[in-house]
Image (cartoon, rainbow, N blue to C red; front, top):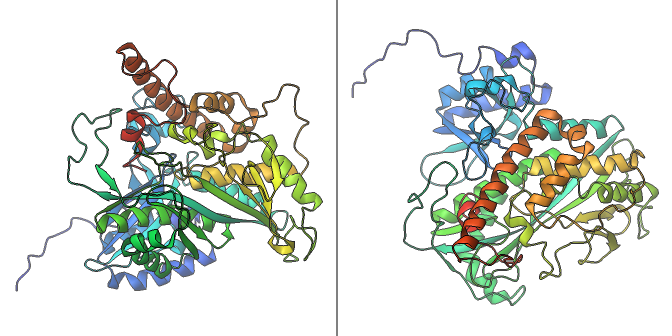
Length: 507
């Protein structure tokens, strides 16, 4: 067999910017060592998917040949800023054609590229037959080598450094609810789709009747899909603990052992991505949307379990001691921090129109009141465990939230509490969580703590993205009311067709 040799005018060593990683010293010793191992492993893969997490919490990626990825390890990879500009329905929310897009990042003008640098520590070969695909998470940089101000992963890394400066490390456990449905034949959703207009959601059928909590027979019914999924997650090294059937039809809860915070956020991104991939391969659809518009579905939540490790002593600083139930003084201060910032940062844990359906009064185990209790699933913050196992469970989040933003907000609030940076509650301070995306967005915009945490560019960008999403929904709903297709006061606990189209497939 003869193969034509294609002449290359110059060596491809600049897919991002030549020697970008070395020039700006972007890797530590651990990453440098991992990069050498990755390069040695590239002969055994057919393609590499380089991904980063956009502001909405969705993995965006390019698929690279192994040789292109070798160059990206040295030079990074150019990416379009589109994921920073579009809202959840792909409407342009940040005007990149304006002289000033209003975010404070001049590189967005004209939608110029930024550079994604693979983090070699996250490189993994995805299990499966056929072409061997590796998956790696990248970090976003501007072309001058500075961390991209809109990067959620860089934000979480900065918060973790605040802990490290105090010889502390935040520890996070993931408890995630999601829906498994069976795909039916039907349109792919392109009709009527466009920028800011999502087409039909996938047609699906429920896989069981639901409402028999933890029923073993339902576990058996889901096993042909969930058992292979669990095997893949374990093969990827994810610290899977349990897979169980929740209340709704085909509603699944998946839990993982505690991890250090950045690892936990990476694990969440990988888990959601791989779960959708593996279920689709078996003719099913996995969705992390909180409340799909399907008969008898119960809302799904994401419960974030949190503790803090003293890295010098190995002690859980939230615990009183090794055997006593309750919170230490630092633990109580941590909880006070979470409570004080609950309204300000709610947008980062519940970022969609649909997520607030779960916080309606109809769902008694979903939190609405800002408060905490020992061992109560009715509380926003549930304190549980004894001794070194003491931790705080925040029950607010929806399962499609950006893991880096969610964790950064939680961990920053808790550390502010430990550091005594929480003011006394003002008279008339809200005692309940926001009831809608619009309420949450208003609280986020008006809070001085959001810019302090996120920096002005990311805070502005999120406001623009969420303002676009909320306004499109409100416009659609107004049209429905005008045409007599919806009540002026719709049921707050019931999803709409707009939400189902907007979120069911993407999340």
